[in-house]
Length: 167
Figure (cartoon, rainbow, N blue to C red):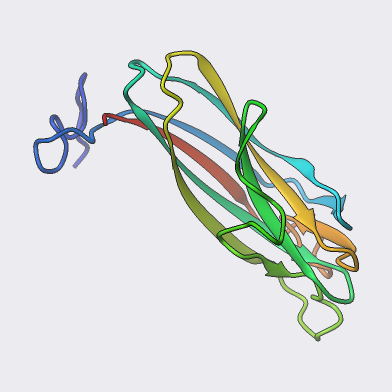
């Protein structure tokens, strides 16, 4: 049964202390893409903008990247950027979420994997902000394959959700 409301859902949050969802923005991508990620950061097609209704509200970001690699070794890492500010680095040394193995062919695996990440941001204003998912890999990683594996040229779906929530 659907629930319809013209206010916060749930009103007052789960425990009556805020936290209700005000708006949701969704972006998905099913196009197979390849990025040369040997030590280079690239912006993926997962990008979406949101304008907060109140400067005290937060943005809950959930992104899921369907990825594989074609290198002989190494790892690929996914980061998050708000406008020009890095929120989650795509660098192997500082990425709190880890990464995926690029050696999909070298180790006998020929599959793409889903890599989900959750993050809460506090922009502290009511300006429009664009969130972008970025990818990077260590030298030797070769190509980062998005929405595909080495064998399949169109095999996956990547998604980005932005939720404005009351603080």
